Image (cartoon, rainbow, N blue to C red; front, side, top):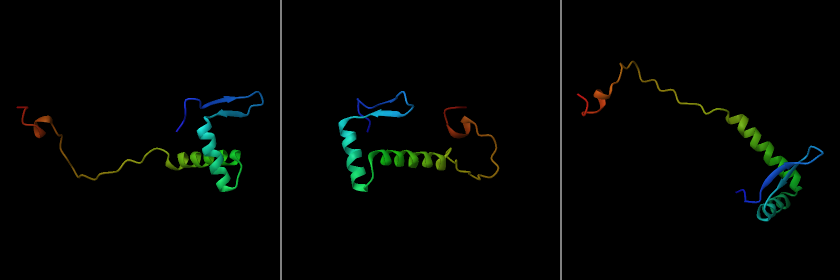
Length: 83
């Protein structure tokens, strides 16, 4: 969960610099150590997975309901308060 001190800026060389809380930094460092990779590699991996998931999901697919032929439905057909 992003902390109050998390932020992203770009430095003069065009690289992204991410300022994160000490808690989030410790979590990233621990996860990278557990996987045996650098923090930079872990962040790149997480970004790539997130981007791939966004492409895969795309726009949500709505269900198609085949309800047959239905005439117009009016409020009076549903509620008794309309006469």
